[in-house]
Length: 154
Image 1 (cartoon, one colour):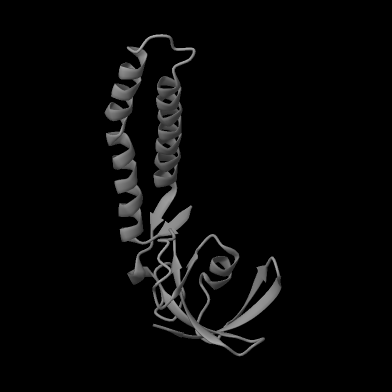
Image 2 (tube, rainbow, N blue to C red):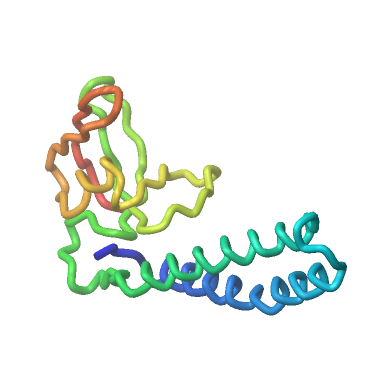
């Protein structure tokens, strides 16, 4: 089960609908390429078929993912507990630096935000999930283990 916010679930559903809407366009490209003649040496036909295969695979992947999504309901979670959608201030116990992190189910790819996005399935996200203010979390990273203190939830 994967926890996401309502907005993140909507983004996944919108992406699925966009991919489904591409089906007729790809089918039309295949038909036009097929009409050009010899399919063995028809690069446009093969490219369109490849695109169709990738599109259908992504549709299946998103449909399966949506089945497993669980929208995080903030009302069911204690106010001092980190959960999907939380912004938390952490102190790195090694270098004493403080940073803001947003725990998300689906990364937005937005690097301009004031918070560092971490997905709930990442090592940092797994360590933060259900932590409380005052807890020290241990994160096993490729470069070694780091420890962070949860200072506050914003």
